[in-house]
Structure formats: structure tokens, C-alpha cells
Image (tube, rainbow, N blue to C red; front, top):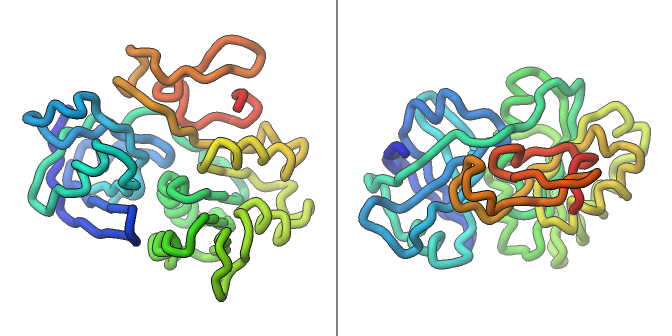
Length: 254
């Protein structure tokens, strides 16, 4: 574990908080799709275990995290302010591959976090991509601020809202992308498990070219506790923290 100082804090809508953290070692080594384990500090014992968070972006000696306030641990983190320090372990896990000739990025809600990091890396490398974001409620459209500088962003909301597509993000993808447009592309996705499961139907025959970033409950973050096991296609188990969190869709049973 190392210590990272909060340099900037920003809220996105009612439920999301972004921290920019100063920690040179993590910022210099992080790759899109990797994550860190975070605790509020040495004096906090409830909750005892750290929480895993995907890395949102890196900039020089700083990196950013965005999390949704959903329980005791994230509620505690949300009350920290600029100048406070966190215990952080990382970067951990296996990230996205970066060998695509073109990409289609599909995010469901907070699943946009690792894909924002990926999109910025693809942009830096000159690899063309389209970014699809879907949210359930209009108040979560605040997340669009995170990707407003990216090219080719399309979004959907399951609540009716002016200026956007009404439906799920996969409904939007199906409406916008004909087979010829995704045939040669690599597809990257992160979001609810149900959304990830449907990718095989939306992109038939592409499971080898679909990379998904999975979420899981983790105790350690590096394969010791074995608490994040998921079924492996063909038998056995993967561990999301050490074998993933990024997998080819063809490798996992969702």
C-alpha cells in the first residue's frame, strides 16, 4: 500500500464522485482497464477491507478515480476532501489490449470509467473509435461531462430526455451500427452483467474480438483471497482481480 493525496474533488450528479490523486508510481505504470484497491486511511476499520476502483485517467504524477456512492465504504470516501490521503494499492490486474485498427467502446452507467482511460489512449495512438454511453436515469447524464472532449460520442437514456436516444445503450448500438461498420473493429465494453451477456447477440460471431471489463467483490486485489472467482468457459474458474478484470467474452460465462 502507498498513500495518495486528494488534489481535486468533483461531483457528477447526485451519486458520483471523482478524485484526482497524487501518486507518481501508480500514475506512471497504470494501463487502461487496470484498477486500484482503496481504503480511507489507517485509522478506519469499518469497513475493514479496501474497495476496488477502475482507473479513470492519468496525468503526469496523478491519476483519477470515479466511484458511485452505493454503500458504507463509498459513502465514507465521498466525505473526504482535498488534502486528505487514501491508502492505495496498484495498479492491479490485466488491462485492455491496444492493438485494434478501430474500436467500438460500449459503457453502461459507471462502466464508462475504464473506457474513458482506454478512449484517451486510443486517441493518443491515432486509433479511430466510437464511444457509446447508456444510463438509466436522466440525472446520470452528468457523466457525459467526462467524455465531452472525445470524438464520436453517442448516448442513450432509459428515461425520455430531449436530445438523446431513449432506450438501452445496446438498442442505440443496434440502431447506429450496421454489420459492415463493426466487422473489422475490436469491441470494448464495461457495464452491468446483463448488458455484457447480450453482446454476443448484438455482435454474433465476434466473441473473440469483444473485451469486457468485469466488476467483482474483492478482498485483496491480487489473487490471494480467491473471493472474486467467475466461471471459465470450458470449465474451471478465473479470478477477476488477477486474471482480469479484462477478459475476452469468449473466455467467461456470464
